[in-house]
Length: 213
Ligand SMILES: [Zn+2]
Image (tube, rainbow, N blue to C red):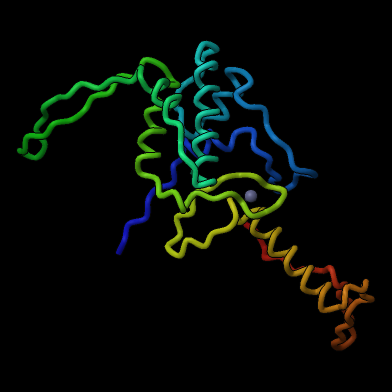
């Protein structure tokens, strides 16, 4: 059984910053500002950075964010990836080799020193891109959402960055379109379901949504 690769978390997080999205409850699609300041940047990077972000980190972090966007777009387009910027940012990460004993066996391990937050993240980005299966990287199929995701399903058939809300919304849209077409595109007067003393009138646009936790 083939082992599925883990999602490239740093690539996805960085490449999705500032991208158009429409989460549940949002009245319209919007884009968040990209690493606007230390506090917001720390919150935005919380998924891949477990330390505070200094103002001095922001310039290189923004460079890395743009490099991640270019990398993701190049992969999505099946084009060539320019590695120079990511490599330049990762250059401040260095490793030394150490000999260790594990379970009685001699092993060598690399001990990394990252001189900056951006360098540490650039190094992680290189590891993720090294392990990435390009055809699993996709753009969300919901028109109002531009987010990129990594399809880890065995069937490789995932279409939305998340079921909630994009999967639900797109299924509702398809359902409405089908009902509209089956109605000849005419505005319907509703279908009447009678049972006992209760009468339920279903409007053609009515869609039964699964209950969400
Ligand atoms: Zn989406």
